[in-house]
Image 1: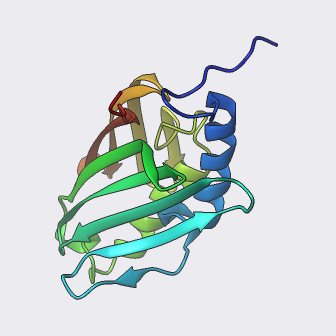
Image 2: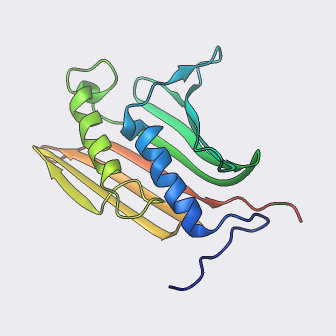
Length: 173
């Protein structure tokens, strides 16, 4: 096996980051159903998550409204940001919005997609069908730099869309 690339200005390898992100997503993300905190300014957060003695920590924070949200996942190494994924999403159907009668079904589909993502930087697989929900995702790039989009169709209508981008954080020299 070839040696794993190190992130710039850190001792962390791609393999270490990937393994840490998998563990963080299982324990501390939307897909994990982890407990969230809400700050006075309305920002919601899951984390920080860490595995001692590792120098890495993970946080997912976002601002949401009834029909949409935007946020950022962040990995720090010894307190310095080394990797991020920003995202913006929109729930296009009133019945699927927060408080709507079908919101829990949309949440179920999105959590399932995140749990079976083939690559940790992607938010889900290229396609899955759960009941009458059709999830699709497209991501270009790798863990060090990527952009992507995901969507959920219900009975042929687009009800959810999300764009995301991220990768390594460039550190000052």
